[in-house]
Length: 278
Ligand code: SAM
Ligand code: CA
Image (cartoon, rainbow, N blue to C red):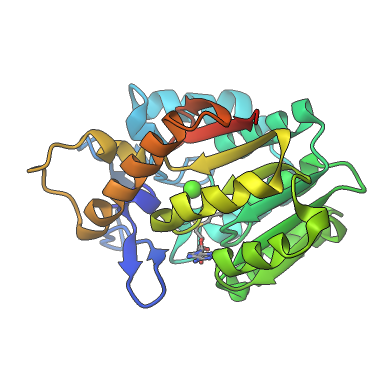
């Protein structure tokens, strides 16, 4: 059973991550986590989305959700989350506690113009759009438009669709197109990166030209479900092993980049926040 995109199967044709579906006997209402423990499923129970294995216990994560996250989650986000839970790749979705964290961060920063690389059905995108002011804009990019389209009605429902500019295609190409326009350089307040992990270093070089000095880039899944500290001989699913070296590499690149201040925040599967200073 999977917990996150860290456990997601790779579709080698497009570098995308596809989640493996939890084993199901048609009767069981439980999913096994990486510690062999069982997490209850059902209304109000969290999906197995990775971060809980980084906490002391599954119950602790459920406590966070039930105490601080679910009671405050926007209805359109909840509806989008419940729709996404029925989608076969659902474990790729941003978790609601991380969405709440992003929203708080965006508001603290007074972010107005942002970019998102890696949309899927749009939980983090809708969180972003809700946190931006009415005249804010998020340029969102993904190689698959159809998953974004599944989430779009919820963005309309929330009254924030006018803030969203979706661009289909490989993220690097879309960013290169943005860089051709001088007005985009040093323009963006916040950028969330949650797409092909083997390109994070390539994204970083482009994004450092698009983010403003004082702005923030967030790289998601930088703890890679704990695999960043896996021993060389540890048995990992092929795709986890494949991306591990790229995640470790971006962590080292970010840690030694003098142009940014960083914090690797262990929310969800780890998000490394990078504030541009030079
Ligand atoms: N942030 C999303 C959310 O909240 O649900 C989850 C994003 S999911 C982990 C990763 C996404 O990256 C997938 O939707 C996939 O199609 C997209 N992706 C993969 N390779 C990409 C690429 N080269 N350029 C743009 N998007 C890509
Ligand atoms: Ca992610």
